[in-house]
Length: 336
Image (cartoon, rainbow, N blue to C red; front, side, top):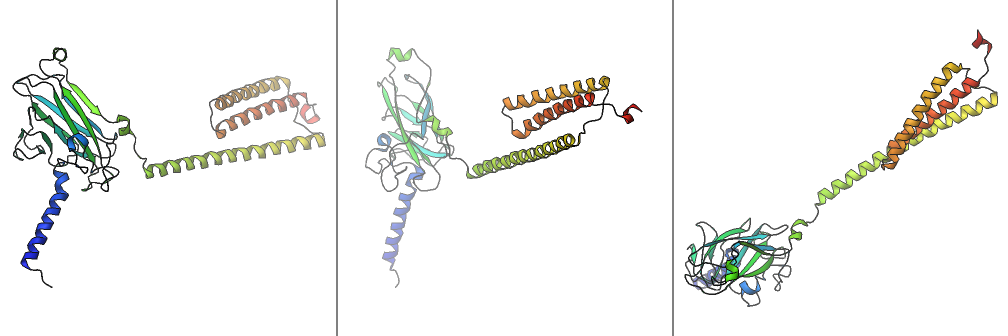
């Protein structure tokens, strides 16, 4: 069945209405949030862990800050505010700023900022409206706004700032978060505030959260592989040196047993040769014992200190064999 021209017009209008609603958040937050409350006072709760099914609370994971804020304003002066939104994983975001309709906001040409309530020309770079906001999601989320105070003393001025950090996935979802900030600039007649002319940085949020991120699965797997390789290397070296030491000790014990059984021993060695040899072997034994014990104290792996300790014992065994040779009886072939 064909659609009549009237049906086509209705369908086209519905598409336009839905499209405008879908694109509204990307060109700036609405005046009222999901709860029907003021966005600048209560936050844009269409973003966050509970969105879009229900309003979400503010999140300290969003670090919302504004710098260049004076303690008090002077008439006929201008003040440059830098609005910044930081998040551990999200880089894009938007904002809404209000001065309670006191003074005017302005910004440089080309900056994606607009009057939030539409009372001024959306393409103008000057707003006399109560609120201003982003006109397109920014990444990084940072804007420089100029505030010009009124020409006369209007008393203390209260500012309200709302900022959201989004995952740049086009739609509001649980990967987005938001936070609120408010502050006061005192009037020119406030003598105590005029004594302090330094500019302030005012912020809200948990800075620690910026440095806490989910570990990369690939990095975790890489660390596991390195630990496994180190374990295989250490275990392999330990088993190799332990097996070698066992074989050598077994061979030495076998020779000692056979020599005692057959009444044999090392060949005779003259004392003038035996003493220097025993001294050298004794020094080598002591040196390797010291090296091995130092490695043990330093917590070195077994495959590092075990060979040193073994060489120390082997040199000490050499001293023992040298002493046996010095005490051996001379044989006829030795005399000849």
